[in-house]
Image (cartoon, helix red, strand yellow):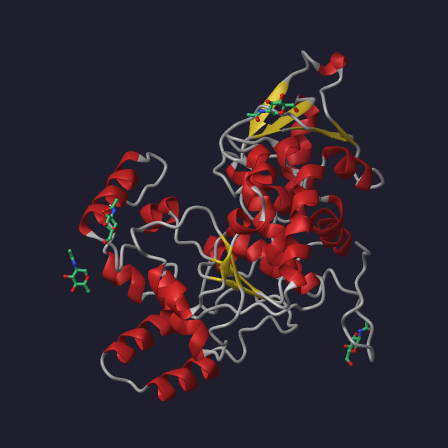
Length: 398
Ligand SMILES: *[C@@H]1O[C@H](CO)[C@@H](O)[C@H](O)[C@H]1NC(C)=O
Ligand SMILES: *[C@@H]1O[C@H](CO)[C@@H](O)[C@H](O)[C@H]1NC(C)=O
Ligand SMILES: *[C@@H]1O[C@H](CO)[C@@H](O)[C@H](O)[C@H]1NC(C)=O
Ligand SMILES: *[C@@H]1O[C@H](CO)[C@@H](O)[C@H](O)[C@H]1NC(C)=O
């Protein structure tokens, strides 16, 4: 992407960003990453975006001709920077260069302590300007209607996919040859820096996505009946037979592949970001949303649901859950297990609260890293704040 004082240029061919990261990069900074299989216009409605923000930021699709040969700076903005950084350091760059190319776009802006007009602009970008491209919106809407026509449903973001497991080093419950394959992928992926991971320790720390089997046990413990309809928001689930135990507990598992026709899905096949867009739409509109891992998409959906009226999102406490699962294996009664799981999640269901600040005791950049991200919880910035009224009036109409 190129920035110059009065405009942001959409540049379509910058690569370098992993699938699904698009929500993140984009929403965090008003910049335009493009993923390697899809670019901005394949996933989002560009015209709508430009028009929706026309009173805030002039955006152009191409560099104006007179700037084609202007001096360019290549800059990686510092993560979690506040207004001062942009007003002072980056503004100075304009003295020498007419164009600044921002080479990274995720988390370049601080979550907190920004002027309110910046936070409000962020809200407009996240929840108003950003829409999926019309074909994604249209099919997404149909999927939601089909799910709703049979009653309430849960959307489960089941992040039990090959890339996730390879990256996180989580292989609990998988076969030896599957573990080998995952390890091989990790070793061969240069930008994943951590190569040696102890899967057992990783799981005990709560760093692993819940397995499909664990999710089934978890949902039953929370009191969801076996007849619950569950939309699986995910790509291909990894592991031979890994869905069997979830399917046995909850036979009504649905997915875009099951509720859309092959013809409807065909235009999107092979485009991970576009398929993720369909899952995003269904997840935002579900009655209950449950992510099995706190990745970018899960957090974006969580924040979006908060914005739309504190819709129920159950965030599993993975660290405490895995030790309870282990206790269950060692003979904890089902009743005691259910009671403890329910208690543990009483306050993890998306009720309104202010965004959390940094973890106590952290310093420097670590402080920023431990803050709850703006896009996970846009409260209170994106809601009107009036005393003596319910805090559910939105600034924006969608
Ligand atoms: C990116 O978008 C352009 C048009 O907007 C399209 O022609 C091109 O094929 C897209 N690239 C990829 C990798 O999808
Ligand atoms: C992984 O960690 C567990 C628990 O700390 C330990 O028992 C096990 O030996 C470790 N495995 C390897 C291969 O180091
Ligand atoms: C998967 O498991 C089934 C049943 O255990 C077995 O018949 C099949 O060969 C396995 N497939 C692969 C690819 O390992
Ligand atoms: C709302 O009330 C609190 C305390 O009652 C006060 O500190 C705050 O300034 C008020 N906010 C507004 C927007 O009036």
